[in-house]
Length: 290
Image 1 (cartoon, rainbow, N blue to C red):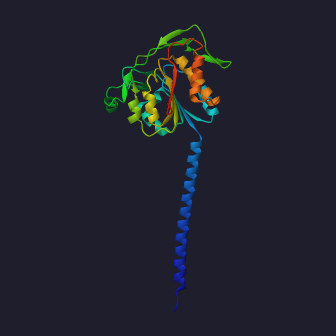
Image 2: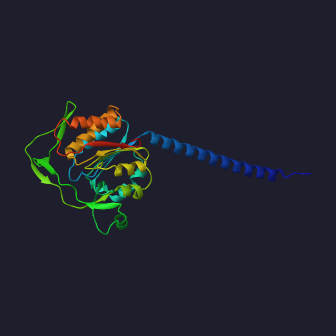
Image 3: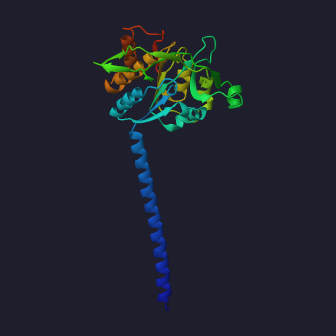
């Protein structure tokens, strides 16, 4: 029997080409998958922190941004900063999916001790009666006006405070003062955290720098239920200067001095108690192990 060697050679070339293509695609897929996995692992090894400053338009403190960012970065975190205009209801909806390990919120807060779902955080989004109607009807968002606080100005610039010898102190200067606006804003509630936020947090630490954010544990419980590991906040009203001092002191003790979060909060409160505070707020820590 005779064989057509030309035909056989032709089909061998075709088969070899197909095998080559299959191997090339397979190897490329493995390479891409390994690269993606490596990139994901690398991104997960770099902790992410965010500063959410809802007070920025009314009570700006760029020094706090600078010093807090340095503390985070020295501890190995990548830091993002969002200010008043960025902090909408949609921003908070997406917050769990942003994959932050540490969330620092500088914000107005409010609470009503007679209402179960009362602990709220202000957004930077002005209230409109015909916006977020379903969220309003479900009680996930509310409207509110921030507590008026005197803001001092000197020579046309913001008064400030400095750090000297590791002790936080306020500067006493001759100043004029103004009060905050009476605008109404959207506020988020614990129910919004439960049902309005998309995704889950992953052992995220929260610092809620605002009045009465821990007057009840409801907001903290909802954040823990959403995947947070610990929440720090105030059990009553607090002034913006005391709040900012707390934020930096807590970060320094937790990130730089490697103290446990509860010990860091207690240490900050002991320091604050050594001088008069404008308001009676005390720091509280809430975690899974309570």
